[in-house]
Image 1 (cartoon, rainbow, N blue to C red):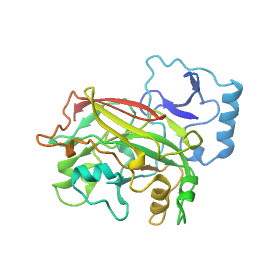
Image 2: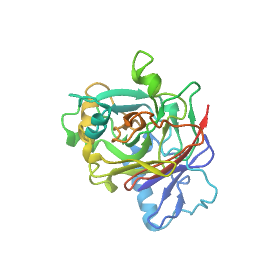
Image 3: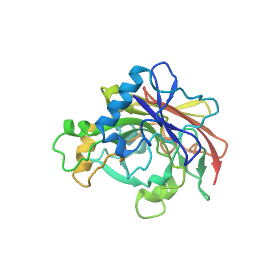
Image 4: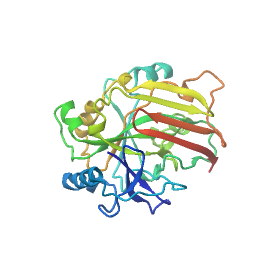
Length: 285
């Protein structure tokens, strides 16, 4: 299923995109798309049955904003330097274990919402990523297979980053990762049954129409199941938590000087195979 949330910011309603591309209203069945729903197999079954029976009313998508596909996110765990090609372009050694940092849930915006360049920023960068949405409580998992079994679905994430804040201002990466609007998510949450192999997905990103990133999850150093297993050894993952699994090569930081960092007015578009497409116009905070 392709689950999404539509409407003005803070007032989104749950919806489903059917195989014909028609937007269907879920508000008569569920209150929202969040961790509570993803952990409830009966509720998900009712959605599937209603969709198959044609019982879901259509929504007019004209002029309707698409919000983040997940409400009330608990935490966003991010995996750094998780693609071989990205590590090479930045001159970094591939990590022996996953690099973990966090984004605050309030960085999440809709897939087509404005992204704000922070005040004083000169190195705002792009990163297309596969986002993993957790559907079952994961703690001390033993195998990558168990890790995959705890995934509810997948989405496109844009891990916007400010490189000066991240690497030149002291401390951890978090200062360059948690600026407002720095995690567009969606358009859809695609349930795991529709993504049989998360290590066979293309990730692409364009800036002002020019292709900048053209990679694949096959390049991931630590695949999805292993990432979930590994993270569960250090913290409990709950339904509705999100894991951003890392970006391929092609970020601005990896270019020769002068590096083409983002500026107000730039347009970024990105997509992941089968998970939809995002488009953001950059503006000054």
